[in-house]
Image (cartoon, rainbow, N blue to C red; front, side, top):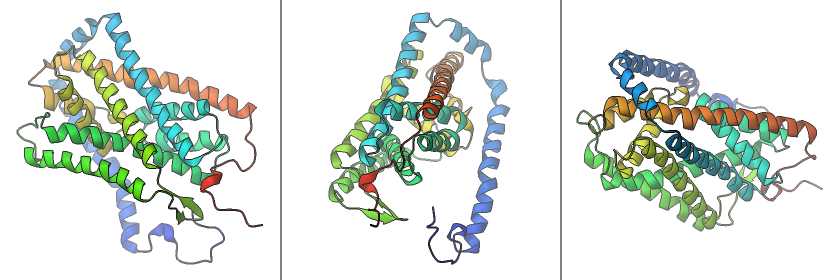
Amino acid sequence: MPNSDAMPGPDTRSGGSPWSALWRRARRWAFPLLGLVVLGLLLSHAYKVDWGGAWEALGRYSPGLLLATLALCTASHALYGCYDLLGRLHTRHRISRWRTWAIAVTSYAFNLNLGALVGGVAMRARLYARAGLDDATVAQIVGMSLSTNWLGYGLVAGCVFASGVVKLPAHAHLGEGAFRALGVLMLLLAVAYVVACSKAQGKQWQVRGRRLQLPSPRLAMVQLGLSSANWALMASAMYVLLGGRVPYPVTLGVLLAASIAGVVTPIPAGLGVLEAVYLALLSGSVRQGVLMGALLAYRALYYLVPLGGGLALYLVLERYAGAHPPPPAEGAEALSPPRPR
C-alpha cells in the first residue's frame, strides 16, 4: 500500500500513464469475456460427451477405491497447508502452527472452487487479519505459498515435459521440440531460484517501508520438495481412478498441462477446462465414458468434498478468532523496520 505520509504527487495506482489505465480497464473486461468464450465452446461440445458411459463408470467404482482416492486427496490438501508453515518460518510471525495450517487448508479449498482472488487472497487476508497480522506480512505469506506451489510445479512439469512423456495432439500449435524446450526452461528456473536464494542470503530490500528477503537455500529446497510431493499426490489420485489404464508419468503430465490451462482460463475451479484437456490428450488411450467418470469422481473428491471441510474449518477459525483477540502489533518482527525511539 502507498505510504500515507508521503507528499502528494501523481497517483501511482493509475500506473502514471494513460496506456496503463486503458490496459487496466480493458483487462477488467477481457479476462471475463475470454472465460465466457471458452465456457461457451466447452458447452457447445458437451453433447458429444458419453455421459451415459460416464455415469456407468462412476457406478462401477468400489467404496474401497473411492476411500483410497479420498485419502490421497486429503493428504494433498494437508500437504498444501504446510506451505503457509514455510511462510511462518520465513516471516517469523507468532500465530500458532495449527492455526496457520488451518488457514492455508481453508483458503486452498475455497481457492479451488471459487477462484484465487476469493480463496488464495481474500480468505487468507481476512483470517490472518483476524489473527493480528499486518498486510505486509500477509502478502509475504501469500507470496511464499504461491512461489512454493509453482516452483514445485516447474520442477515436476519440467522433468515430465522435457522427457517427452506427454504427446501433444496433432493439431497442437506447440511443436514437440518447443514443448521439450519449455520443460528444460522450467527446470532451469527452479534451479535459478535456489541459486538466487543462496546468493542473496542475508540480503534485504526495502519495499514500501518493509524489509523483504528471499528464503534461505535450505528453505527453498523444502519448498521444492513439498510442492513436488503435492503434485505427485494429485496425479496419484487420478491414476487410481483411471485404474492404471494410463501410465503414471502420462497421468502426471496430463494433470500438469490441465492445471496450467485452468490457471490461464479465468473460470472458477477450471470448470470444464480440466475435462477438456484430459479428453484432448487421453481420448485415444481411454474410452471416453471411463475417462469422464474418473474426472467426475476426481472433481467430487478433490474439489467438492474438501470444500465442505474448508467451510467447517473456516467456522472454527472465525469462532476461535472471536474468543482469542490478537495481541497488539503482532507480525513479522524480524523483517519489519525498527520503530523510531
